[in-house]
Image (cartoon, rainbow, N blue to C red; front, side, top):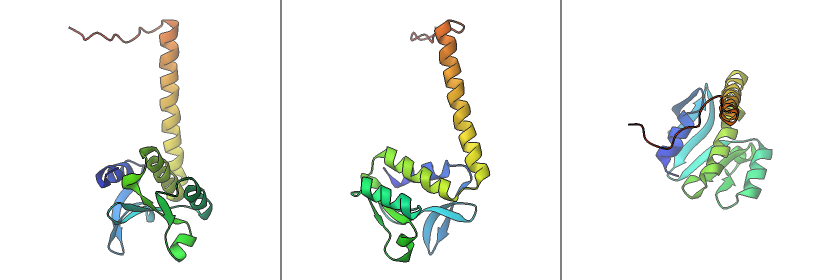
Length: 140
């Protein structure tokens, strides 16, 4: 994954903005940081210590605890250029949820549930014949 893709993904999360912390770029919700970019190819994410342990156990080739006290609190380095996009999406969503206010998390969950319900309704209507299947032929 490229840095630009990671930035775009971070800024697509509800309430996320870009800022700087100790001279390094970061992404936050309100005043709470969920990800920073301290150097090329590496991002640091806000996890709980338990989340950090689980990630390090499952993905030891792409992540490690930040050295010192920050790492003990759950801050985790992820080398994103070599990581699978699904891992990055999961890591970023987890870090965002760790800092986002409940109202934003609830809005995000409601949007996801509504989208899934609409998709299921459309499929059911197509199966019953109440709406026609999409044609694969181009319109003239």
